[in-house]
Amino acid sequence: MTDLLLEPKVYIVGAGPGDPELITVKGSRILRSADLVLYADSLVSEALIHSAKDGAEVLQSSGMDLERQVELMVQAVQAGKSVARVHTGDPSMYGAILEQMSLLKLCGVSYEIVPGVSSVFASAAALGAELTVPELTQTVILTRAEGRTPVPEREQLRRLAEHHCTVALFLSASLAGHVAGEFLAAGWSPDTPVAVVKRATWPDQQILRTTVERLEGDLQEAGITMHAMILAGRALDPQLVDHGAPRSKLYDKTFTHGFREGTSQHG
Image (cartoon, rainbow, N blue to C red; front, side):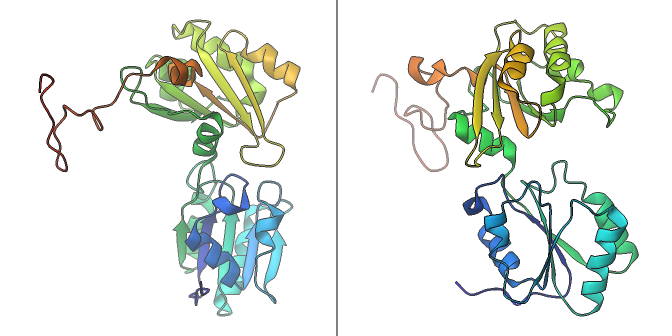
């Protein structure tokens, strides 16, 4: 596999949730080809960053403010160099990339977003879960509990939870008591399944299965306060695999679609 000949611009690359093999092929090739690699060192695997090419400038972003990061990227591009700005998961989810893109555009610097595997889907995979189960839910809400970053009134967790679908909560492990209270206030049963995955796909990945009413206590007992994805809803019931979940129409032998003619139930 040959590396890319990159244009002098900023590539905002989703590195995936942690496992170095879960970056996309394109993202990996950009990382191996870029002249400057600026990465979120507290969240992106060092093993992945080690694939940067010899001679590349590799910098950690955790100690930099926004203006310094953008300054470095702009200087590199204006010098004819390519930049890989490496984010954890998928950069479009809580990646704070809009503010970077706004400043880059103001400076006349081109950029491109390369998607990555989000921690929400890595967590579902770690749990062996399908988030959209026929007859249970066909909707997934991706959100966060309100903390230091405010949430619009119409997006308060209680109002979202009234849909009774699968809810994925980013950045909310330290607010477990508030989360549980909002679910209960929205009419969720106390025994509704909840699964928490800390550092999904990392070597020290931790999985906790609990319920809405036990969420706060179980997280406290496990010492989980950050770097965790909370998935809640009936689709997270681990017994669905054993007891036979409702089937979709996709593979139903009586269902006709563009690639297969269904058979009669009596045929």
